[in-house]
Length: 204
Image 1: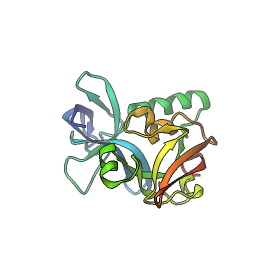
Image 2: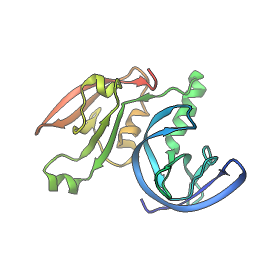
Image 3: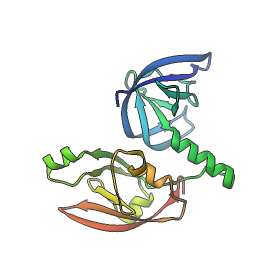
Image 4: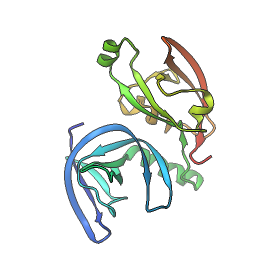
């Protein structure tokens, strides 16, 4: 968060190779994205940026100051100013690898919108650090397994959750396949419990 970024795209479908700059405003965001009445989709763990992203920019790259692609521009908030979102590049790379292997872009998902709780915030509130569940998507794997809003996911497959890429919910799930069963440790009502969640593809 705070790192300088550059977005490139065809703004408004007319102005090709438009370059805008800004910073990473937030990480691990969960949003519902739609496109001109075509439908909506839940997107997890996206990058929030204040670099100007306009209709037509979708599919363009989001670079860091070193020129490395860190994301792909995907959405902009219609209710605010300078609030855009990009899919993390490792998510895109794993989807491309999956397409090369299977001919499909389907990938597994857990089905929660969450906010990470830092160790400091956890100590202040006398709860464990982890992913605080803000929303459980109806009929998602998480919903079917019994996770609820207000739960705190502490570990997945024995990995303690953090904001680091390889130990975030999206980072762990993206390394799995559709149909895999994950052991999820969570905190609810002052006690820890463990359940199994069977991953499904989005739209099932």
